[in-house]
Image 1: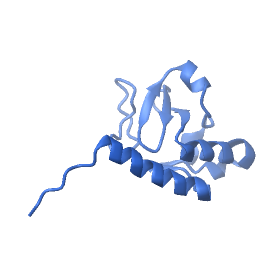
Image 2: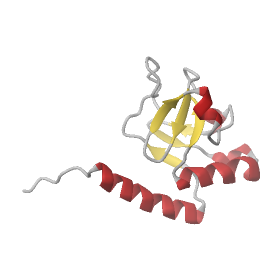
Image 3: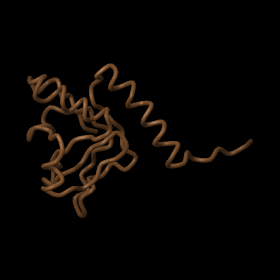
Image 4: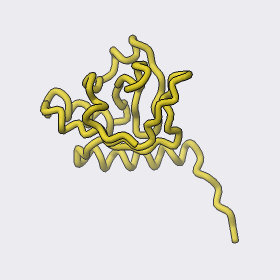
Amino acid sequence: MQKSNPPTAAELEGLDRFYREGGLRTMASAHVHYDDPHCPHPGCGHTMEWIDFKLGLHGDPEGIYKPLVRSWWQGTGFAGRCPRCGGWIRFTTLRKDAIDDLEAAGLPRLPDDWHSVAQIA
C-alpha cells in the first residue's frame, strides 16, 4: 500500500482559499476546527479545538454578523479575547495567533461576551 504525503503549505492555502470562496458566497456562519486546540498565548493552554462562533445570536446583523462573517471568509479573520487568559487572539480559517492590543485594534473584533454564545469544544 502506498503512503500519502501530507499536503504542502501551498496546497493547504489553495484548499483554504477554495473553502473561503464558498463560505463568502453564501455568507455562511463562521465555524472552525483547529489542529492545535490550545490558546496561542504562552502558559494559558485553554482548549478551543472546535468553535462555532454563532455570530447571529448577538442580535446585530449589520454591526456584528455581516462584518465579521465577511472578514472571516475573506481571510482576514477577526480578533477576540481568550475566555481564560484574556489575551487577544486572531482567529482565521487556518489558525489562531496571539496578537497584541495594537493588532487587535486593526481587526474586526468579536463582542466581549463572544464565548458565552459560541459553542467551544
